[in-house]
Length: 317
Image (tube, rainbow, N blue to C red; front, side, top):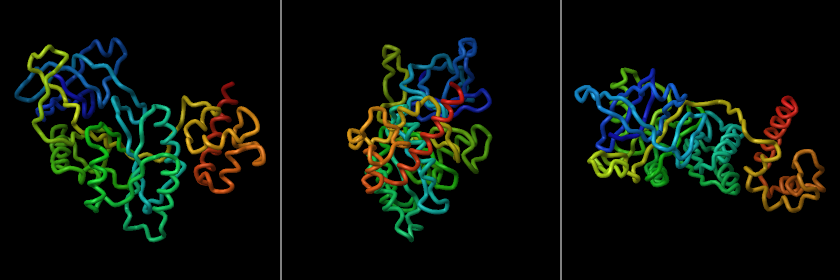
């Protein structure tokens, strides 16, 4: 049989199949010998060893489209990062780090600013302007608003989406309001793994689909096995985070992930301009930030991240 890993705890991998069942499986020893660890989001093959208790043995990991390190997941189509407009106030530096990280993986990002009912100072529209100007899709609203939920549901349709953000911004509430039955699926999974669900402690995938949709397994020559249909929607609700360490990106490459800088880089007098240490008179990006053509908040976050990367590079040189 085939399916998708939706959670992994204590050596058990919980696999969701196209007929809307969840099997608990252990991985065969060959994965350990090869140093391969199954990840949430993996499309896999497995053998059923106990049909009554729905247990099995994971035998094959299908080819991965991509892999994220944090959260540790595979085969992601897009990310939705959730921040609250207030309570807690949004940490835009953390948001920009996440955007750089996803940009490095070439994974599109949707930004959702939640808790519009707390938008008493009009900050939400300010945040929308900053990130739409930077080229991102931005949704503003509330998890209590049906129209907001409909917009998000449409954005997630047919894709596997990482849902990420700090604790307390409403990620789990959003998941439970997206589709009818999501609460039930989360509850059933919690019961199966004998663990209560108070907060998100582990990365877990929730299938948001009409149950019972079957699709022939093209890898098995039409033997009757099934795999998750391409049109299914999955959401990976991840533990909240308060920091993000960026690795694998050089300081000289950082501006590539601030795409709103691109139109102004030709105005820089020197090739290889850092856009940090040069005087505004010779740096097109700094000039743009001074006249608000580029968000000052985004520019300041760029400078901070650049200096951290530069310091790290000098340390390990």
